[in-house]
Length: 175
Image (cartoon, rainbow, N blue to C red; front, top):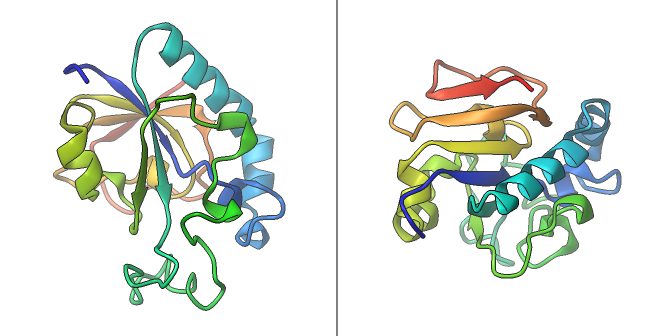
């Protein structure tokens, strides 16, 4: 991958955005629907591909035995008990509207922030170290730690019901 801007498609997985996902009761599918998040994200992906911009798909998920599950996480703590976010399951598959194209990288992360995910930081260093654009789901689309790469959230492709928890290098592109 060249040292270029990338589109990071964050957590657009069935568990979060599909009405049958285990987190549907939190209102994420309805919120995403009200903002046309999935069609807008699909458009962003198509435009990135057409422009030669790499599209990297990032999912939150855990190994089947949950050995990498963060028990103390306020947002992810209930995943094990509910058998949610298990890698390789329907829940961590990307929603049909935003499926990866052949050959596009898929990165799994056992945490919220993609910026601290070693696979992204080391294997896709250009995407992790140059400005990125991201459609995404809560709260990954609006949160980056202070040391993270500047990221621009594509506003109509983001479904996040809460603002970022602290000032971050994430900005929002209105379209």
